[in-house]
Image 1 (cartoon, rainbow, N blue to C red):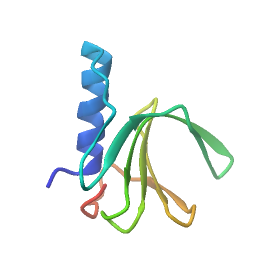
Image 2: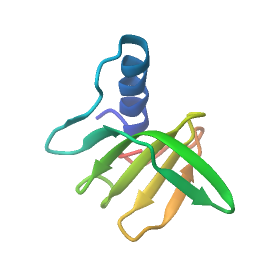
Image 3: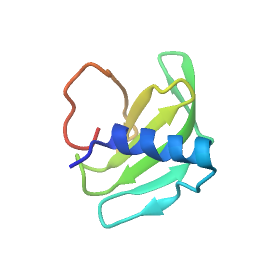
Length: 92
């Protein structure tokens, strides 16, 4: 299975290079453009695209920011910056 970060990067690249609407969904997740802002440790991150899932890695939303930082927000509202060098669970 492709990881969420790879799916988001591809969807955003397709959107920015070819103006293809990335909004899509399947039985596992939904991808949408985003204007959300997420605050973590007094730093505000501007999100550009998100992937939401109720089934993968629990329930939560993976955001990609304008500087390609990935943030996971779980169903309880806890947020975590995803380290790009880590080996993530299947959703990230």
